[in-house]
Image (tube, rainbow, N blue to C red):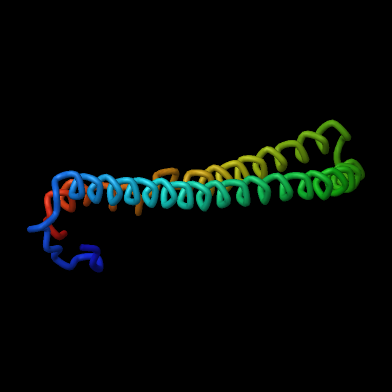
Length: 136
């Protein structure tokens, strides 16, 4: 009685128990496959999120170190021309601008993450029709 997917099955000689057993086995396989697909999709999106967060963290630390030493150098350079307080304020304003740009860029990357398992939702929407014997 077992045939390939999509092929009609002759059930004229099958008992109700056999039919129910086959339906339950197929339904169990379908649910198991859908769960595995959902896991794979969520894992892939979590990997993207972790990669993006790691890159943002690494860029932040490297930027901090560069910013620290360049800020000190700029502050001292401006202090030769201006009062030291004004030089420090100019450096602080420049860093405020840089921080805003980095924040906006990181936020845009994080918003691109899609936590919804698209393929799983699509295939789950096909289950009712498949149970009725209809093809999408």
